[in-house]
Image (cartoon, rainbow, N blue to C red; front, side, top):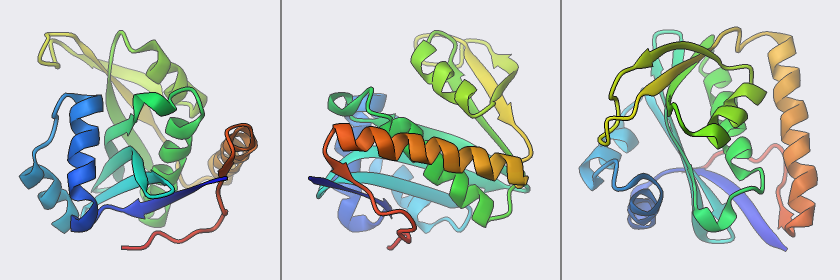
Length: 182
């Protein structure tokens, strides 16, 4: 069995995160950018580990009552295993702990896999940013309200159970209720 854990990014994990960023996001953030996130009291930057290997990365910024999800990436070797869904759930749990009531993010208009994921969480299109990405592709602005409602929390629990059931297929072990350590 492969052990899955989520941790808050720290300096020790930074080299592997930079490698994952280059692979999945084309070098979106620099080392200095990640260090700013580590030091920011308004940022939660999670890594998903399979045993000791970093396979996922997610970040949110707490802005007033909003969780702005800035990054969500899973190593290509681990796609289609509900790991992106799982990491998004963990980010939304952290948003809940911060008592944030809304979530927003930008996603490539052509990224159907990501759009499908966000639709499972009831994110809705709120707008479009023209030529947002380096290659001039538009970004869709997605929005999700009512993060603190019992209905939303129940849906997160349901989606998390869905992930855990899938993990058995891939020989992953996740212990619910794990606290995020530094």
